[in-house]
Amino acid sequence: MTKENLLRALPSVDRLLAEPQLKEITDKIARSYVVEAIREVLNDIRRHIREGETLPEEDLSPERIAQEVRHRIEALASTSIRRAVNATGIVLHTGLGRAVLPEAALKRLAEVASGHCNLEIDLKTGSRGKRSEHYQKLLTKLTGAESALAVNNNAAAVFLALNTIAHGREVIVSRGELVEIGGSFRMPSIMASAGVRLIDVGTTNRTYVSDYENAITEETALILKVHTSNFSIIGFTQSPTIGELVELGKRKGIPVMEDIGSGALVDMSCFGLRSEPMVQESIRAGADIVTFSGDKLLGGPQAGLIVGRKDLVEAMAQNPLSRVLRIDKLTIAALEATLKLYFDPDSVIHNVPTIRYIGRPLREITRLANKLRARLKTCLGNKAQIEIISGFSDVGVGSLPGQQLATKLVAISSKDLSPTELAKRFREADPPIFGRIEDNKFLLDVRTIENHEIATIANVASKILSD
Ligand SMILES: *Cc1c(COP(=O)(O)O)cnc(C)c1O
Image 1 (cartoon, rainbow, N blue to C red):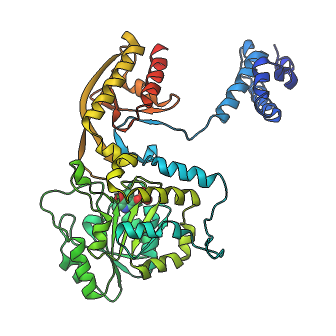
Image 2: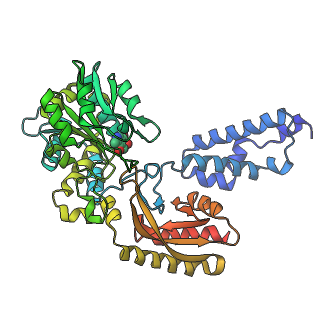
Image 3: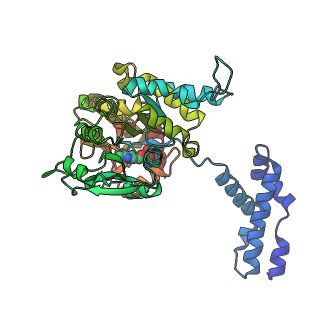
């Protein structure tokens, strides 16, 4: 057929709308949307023909074209951000959305989002209130600080604090603490963006109080301590405690800030882990400002929490940047609910998923692993080999680096699919399931999965391995 004949032979829009598979769709979504998709596909085909591409004739049948239209519509209609199963064994995984919110936070979030709310209205007076009032008292009570402010994330918290306290002036930091946390958070870059001059003191492995003291000038606005959360230097090391820096700051009249990052409010050593610096300890030691994330060890929504001296926090709230970095009503609802759980420290382990996953007893993990293995064996038969092996989980996002939690892993191996191919198929499934590959085995770490997800994993596995 000539180009002209091919073009003329293309089905019309109406003809395509009458195709059963598109008729079915027009019952569910707007007809104009389907018409637009049809025009788009027809235009693409016309272009291919004009450019002289040879298309098999059956590709131009109404049925085939309708099929292509349907695929395009379905691809657009499918949701992009979706619930996933985290069987990586990394409790706080930035790529997988960090902390799973507590049930109480989900409830409050849905309730607040489903209608209007008193975000910035003082119910007593009816006049304009502050959004910070919903969580301020909770944070000050839990940490012992005078005042508190929440912003978008901890990077924003550090940025706002530096910009408010030290803009155009000098901030002293140890060379060993000029950390990078994830690709885009590098302490020196944040300091430069915040408009402060970085004065680094000491060496990579050893810094003394005297190094800070010798660097103090008229221009010094702040002494900063950064928790080196995602690595540890071991061996010949030395760095002053926050208490020692506070003593120096008091003597010289310079505020001291600690960026704690992971921000534990409960003592991690009760899970057999080396203890993480706790926010309330830093405040007790006299830090003027402490910053930490809402979605790391606190186990709440993404936020950056700033606690400390009232005059400094107030100055930050007055900084126009606080408006740029402020959190929304959904985050406030989830944050308030999460913080409330910490008033009953004994129940935190049950009610805050992040803490529950970290503290999950090995016998519970073993029970889950056995259950998953049994389910997989039942639905996969001899299509795959399933075994349980011992291994370790990670807390993730730089919290508790180098410390591993003993766990059980369910290994799936198949004669036909490589571990990489298995991982890819699980990842591309609905819902996406994330495991990890170790020693050339595809592994599912059950530490961070829920009981009801076992059936989901088994369903996906039987689809993947029966194809
Ligand atoms: C994680 C972390 C940050 C960045 O916090 P986000 O909430 O990811 O913005 C900054 N400082 C330290 C020490 C951290 O551990």
